[in-house]
Image 1 (cartoon, rainbow, N blue to C red):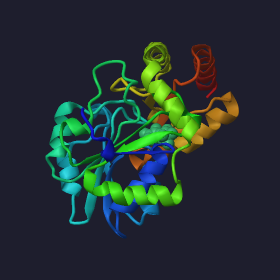
Image 2 (image 1 turned 90 degrees about the vertical axis):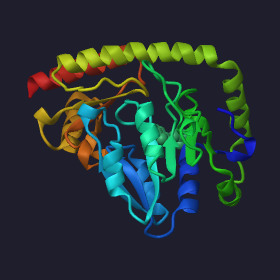
Image 3 (image 1 turned 45 degrees about the vertical axis):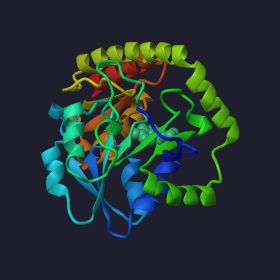
Image 4 (image 1 turned 135 degrees about the vertical axis):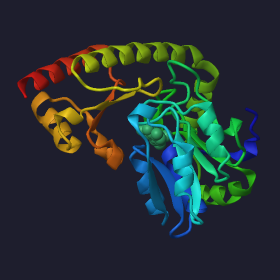
Length: 295
Ligand SMILES: Cc1ncc(COP(=O)(O)O)c(C=O)c1O
């Protein structure tokens, strides 16, 4: 893609960029379409700006991806944007090019959180800007470059929105940390080999974790092919994922995220992260195995 520098705003991570974007985009009562499940912070950000998050359920058999017709059925006169995230947190799955094109054709601006681009193990990630210019892209250095604590991210927006968003950025944050920006430039210029190595490592952990979880009877209908999460169906262990995650934490000393955190349709699932080292993942899976045996 060729993007004009005037369309890019650099800030202290994608999270502040999201806040600025929703502040500019939304009036009180405006709606934003979100998938259910989705990244836990999206509805909070929408509500903070006075907006209303509108959940459209997505299903494990369908790789937890938007069905454009279901999205269309939720569009109203107040819909300001459709939010997509591919690869996705919490599911690790990708939105196909066909679905991206179909969503773009709905004629509503799309906010595409592309923060897990670069961490894809099968297939290829696509940017929404390949399909429509009427889109906002969020990205940053927290995932692909593992620079999470340095707080660096950016927004690509249609030209008409840049000035109001820049004004908010300058009032609230002035600029992204300049040392972090130098680190970001170094990452873009020099870190390709490191990212390739890191990706191979993540892929090895992904395969290991999938095998272990399946052997323990946790369901993964469609394998995650991006990000660093497995969203496993644990409904046979109960309908209350928060209590289950808490029990696993208390008894096995293993941290997993309850599916309900990502929306009502995530209830009964557990999210496992493979951002930790392989020996720690192996230890975690051993503990989970012992926990399940003791139930
Ligand atoms: C989907 C998604 N978007 C955004 C973020 C936040 O990223 P940043 O560190 O750039 O604020 C995260 C972090 O977990 C995420 O998973």
